[in-house]
Image (cartoon, rainbow, N blue to C red; front, side, top):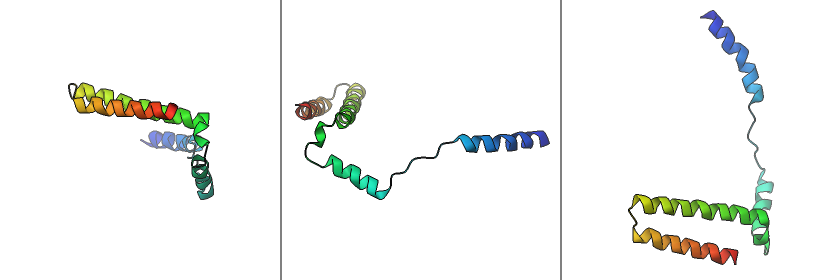
Amino acid sequence: MDQEVEIKRAWLPTLTNKVPLPVRMSTTEQLDFIGTILQPGSSLNPAFLNILDGAFVALLLVFVMLAFVTSGNPHIFALMLVELGLWASVKW
């Protein structure tokens, strides 16, 4: 039992030293980020477009899974069409 406690104590400092702390943005950095997104022409930023494409792909995958689970509910297919139309309008 004493050896087990000593092993835990020996591992504790090494584990706590290697765990990275989360990076937090300051309030001014958050406002700057939101401000750059809301500026005209910011939607042409390639990083923003990649994030937007990822969000649309995730939403489409959710709709495909819902269509499978609901055995082809027409409402889900209508939502897919709306989502694809919105995605096309953003890419245009």
